Each structure stands twice: as structure tokens, then as C-alpha cells.
Amino acid sequence: MTEKEQQILQQLKQSLLHLDEALNLSTQMLKEDSNNKHDLSTIWEEFLNTFLGRVKDKGKESNINLMKLLPFPKLPRFF
Image 1 (spheres, rainbow, N blue to C red):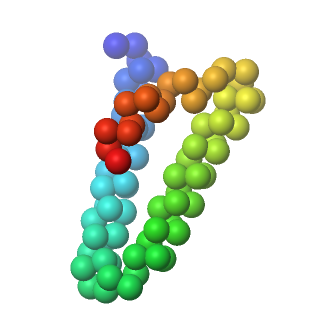
Image 2: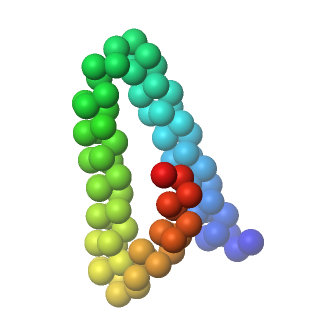
């Protein structure tokens, strides 16, 4: 693995730690009050839209289709 690949992997692992904490807080919030579902849904939707928008924008800036790096055909198994 190249140094750049290691850096990317490290950054993504760090991001997963933050996402894990957000998931823990989300589940805790829902356990405390299920009426928070709408607010949490809005937060997560905004996050996903922002992330995918950034991938798309960065791809346009660099003339590289970064969306092809995301395995969308494999994602339906999660839904």
C-alpha cells in the first residue's frame, strides 16, 4: 500500500470513529424520546446530501468522476 493510500485509509478510519459517535448519540436520543425521529432524520439526510454533494463537486473540479468510486449497486443490500 502506498503512503497516500495509507493516508486516505487513516482519514477514513478517523471519519468512521466520528460517525460511530454520531450513531451512538442518535440511538441514545431515540431511546430517550422517539419523538426525536423526525429531527434526527433531517440531520442524517442533510449529512448524506452534503457528503454526496461534496463528492460530486470535487469530481467536477478535478474532472474525475469520483461517484464511480462509490459502490452504489452494492448499497441496496443495506436497505
